[in-house]
Image (cartoon, rainbow, N blue to C red; front, side, top):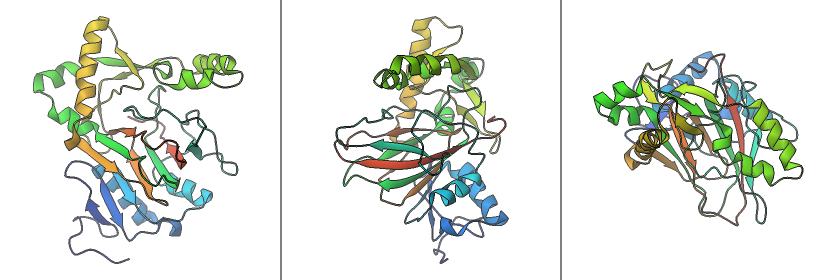
Length: 290
């Protein structure tokens, strides 16, 4: 593949272009359908840890190849949400909105599936049907959020734990809108009890500290009065909305976005109804996320 004049130093096989000064990189000239040997896979994992979200345009992935690409970054069997699955490849989740149909409410800042004790570590998202306009996705850096906080607040946050629950999100409303929704909801609630995560975590690859809360799944801070918990969480949530910590992607068909689910939160902009939008998603995990 051709290499740009000023590639990111330290990478022999990847032609990387920073997407913003704080988060994200575009990979040029790489065809994911050709697979990756050990050296290339190592560089891809290192780039993901360094830049937190990677973008590749003009990719052609079969469902099987999509899963193989995801395996570079972790185990696709570790964690899945409640999305429908691909008809021939059960490890692929379908995130689809159709005119007159259900639109998944991912227009809230979140990291994927933090309501589990061992959440996913990365996600590989592949665009199949894209609106003519709208439907962008925005990522925000949880490490940059941590770095931006006063030292005294960072120290205090490191003593706290957040409670994460799927019931805090839009999933219960989705279940209850379906046939036999009450039974679906009761089953999901029994299988996914609230979990507790430290408010500040250390990334196991980079060693950088990050704020590990999100509005979609973090219901409250354990042990704090509700008012104090809400005020603290709202302060942190507001930090994630700062544009200087963002990478905003305008999707094109056959774009691949790969993100570190530990070090980022993201937001799917819901401005494209009633247009059709379909993304294929593979989430991956490890034996321990942290």
